[in-house]
Length: 180
Image (cartoon, rainbow, N blue to C red; front, side, top):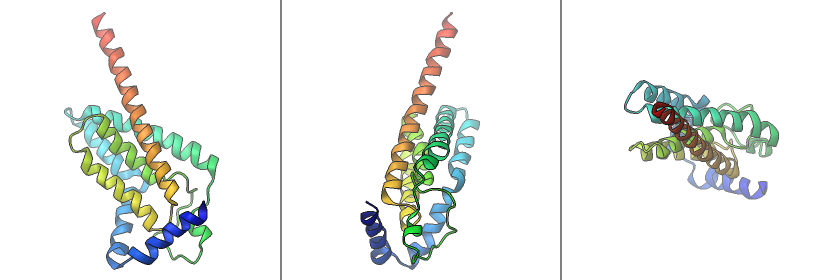
């Protein structure tokens, strides 16, 4: 499988790589560093009374993502990154020090954008595009395999859905207590 995935990454390097993308992709990937964009947006939503529900669902999704992606799955799978397998590649960013599967940048991005979707936040599509751009940047920059990104997206969406379900269950419980 690694051979096919390296071929995909090499295709990106040999066919679409260019000066503009070389300039833009490190900046796009930086949006996902430590989930900072998503954490800031979560805090903004939590402060806003109108969007607090979205903020709470995002916060839950990001915590679930942190636990499952970074604390459980990455150490358990312990997959090498593609630049370790193809050391001829010259990275445009500092080499990440953790494992490759799943992509944490992608998982956090899809957890946040997914939480917006499940919370019915009307501008979720714009953040979905940002999440896709961050995911693509991880491939372009040769720091993740395609299956790392796919796995990260799936995990992020699962965390967002679980967060929505947790929030909904808590709200039902709160409503029942009000009735008593």
